[in-house]
Amino acid sequence: MKSNVLDEMNENLVQYNSELEEGIISPYLVSLKMNQYTFHMPSLNGNNSSFAININPITNEDYDFFDIFDAKRNALEEIKVIIKRRSDCDFFERFDKASFIPRFFIKNDGIEFIFSEYEVSSGMCGNIVVFMYYHELVEFLKPNGPLGFFVTPSRTWNADFHWYKAVFGTLELEKGLNN
Image (cartoon, rainbow, N blue to C red; front, top):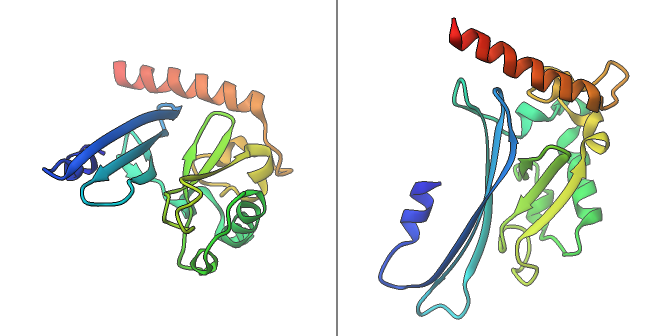
């Protein structure tokens, strides 16, 4: 994220705004989202962008879409259908291509799918964010992925178990680090 900010700093920069949002912060998963607005001369308008990083802080492994969502359950196509249905903006054709993978931000109560201003639309909609609760996504979660242990065998979301596992995992990690 630091390099992204530094790349925007030059003599043509007129305005720069950014904000950082924390999603899930746990011993095994950290999710951060950055919104950035830049305006450079002689442009007629600025550029608004959003991106997220989802990592395992122990291994520094980046989690991508198929680390979280199960390809065997047709997650990519099904989630794209839901995103299009919930969005107030029209998407361009390239959103439907199999090579276009939505970016996402993992929060405590669900997942935001995020698109920068010109990524999937003409730009008149600004950044596009489509939020889905975990219980809406549970059938698409990869069972052996970072969120998979919150899914019961009947493919339901177990929030109580989520809380228990988070506390237990933190205590186990601290115990391991202190030994």
